Amino acid sequence: MSVIETRELRKTYGRIEALKGVSIRVEKGQIYGLLGQNGAGKTTLIKVLLGIVSKTDGEAGLLGHAAGDPAARRKVGYLPEDHQFPGYHTGYSLMDFYGALYGVPAADRRRKIPETLELVGIAGRMNSKIRTYSKGMKQRLGIAQALLHDPDLVILDEPTDGVDPLGRREIRELMQRLKDRGHTIFLNSHLLGEVELICDRVAILQQGKLVREGTIADLTRQKGRHEMAVAPGQQFPADAVMKLGYVVTPLPDRPDVFEVSMPDGQSIDPVVRLLLDKGLGLRHLVEKKQSLEEAFLATVEGAEPGVDKRPKGGRRVRQVGGRD
Ligand SMILES: Nc1ncnc2c1ncn2[C@@H]1O[C@H](COP(=O)(O)OP(=O)(O)OP(=O)(O)O)[C@@H](O)[C@H]1O
Ligand SMILES: [Mg+2]
Image 1 (cartoon, rainbow, N blue to C red):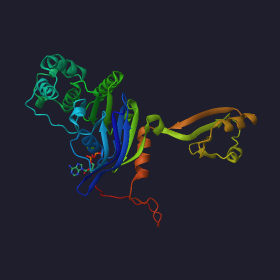
Image 2 (image 1 turned 90 degrees about the vertical axis):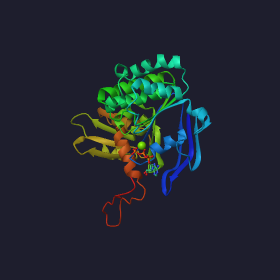
Image 3 (image 1 turned 135 degrees about the vertical axis):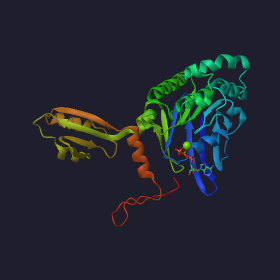
């Protein structure tokens, strides 16, 4: 049973199509990242899963229940985007309030509240009013609130928004610990460097559509692209390599290094064999990778609907002032 499963999920707000048929699956114990530009539909997907807004069409399930089923909701911790906790609460009293809502018994709350606040690094301020907290402290409290009832699934909408770099690392480590204990984490984030460090799989939404999905390794691998160079003084046999069906281009900034790419995903081994057969010395061979940010930017640029990249005049036209 998947922890989260959606099939052809659609959500419209009046004339705005926020989700246009999204199918994803999140398995137990994964840290799963949902990426996309502002307005791509990330928060909407979370709200449909939690039953905060109703779906328009398609399927959405959570922990074996239909999205919005209270039985599933009890097993889920949720950090909303832009949460505004009442400033008159203290960190402790807010946790006590949410804990009671989630049905955590009073004795457990007394024990678990300081523990959970310790976990996110704000136990020392648990008796101060929330209105005296910094932005990052409020965010940490929000995460603690989502963890108090020991949920199977934790859904975090921008968990590290406003948190300083050290705190972001602490939150990453916390997520890793939760994962190690078998919890599943579903998060939204614009901080791709962080997502790359922590997530097992990611999905990229683009204007309500799923445009890519896979492991970080899948998304950052530049399929079949290698850099190669032979020993100094030797000539790279570009023509012979091209005859084998590869595309060969010298790097603009390092003409002795060649990018060898394999359009059909064939192996690089025949090229290595060719070099050795010719008595050449292979001095450099690396598979090219890109960062998640590069992969993301390449994806969302290529996937923009309604954008004709090569109009007749040859000038690139970008859609401006769209609903994003
Ligand atoms: N309550 C609402 N009523 C009308 N339109 C809405 C509502 N909530 C969201 N939308 C629209 O749905 C689309 C998706 O919004 P959503 O909040 O899901 O985006 P997001 O991916 O979370 O963006 P961000 O990164 O800015 O948080 C947007 O076009 C937004 O304007
Ligand atoms: Mg959002």
